[in-house]
Image 1 (cartoon, rainbow, N blue to C red):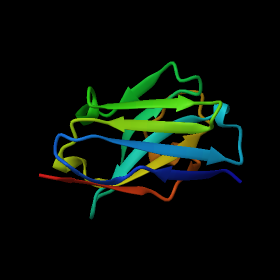
Image 2: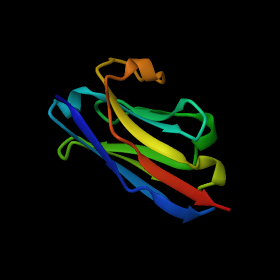
Image 3: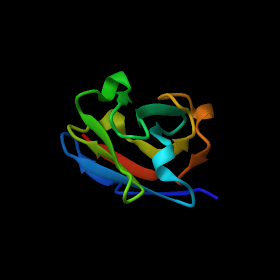
Length: 124
């Protein structure tokens, strides 16, 4: 059973930064595409960023391009999401997920395992 645990969320002022981590256990981490999604109150779970199994390719949702960076360390079974220049509209619960897809994917249905989420709140 694959398990994902996110950490690093919190309360930050607009313009600040946070670094989210996702530790994956129970599977072969280096074989998975990893994605980050977020869900604001009353909204659906939306794609944020994804990274290939090797870490050489990544893709971002337009509103976070240039502000967020996704990375991974296969030796540590860990993926991270560095979030800079945070805005109040970034406030949401952030989830990491893994997929056995061979391509970068942005839909929730393509991901097999999910973490419990970590709250990010950006104050204005």
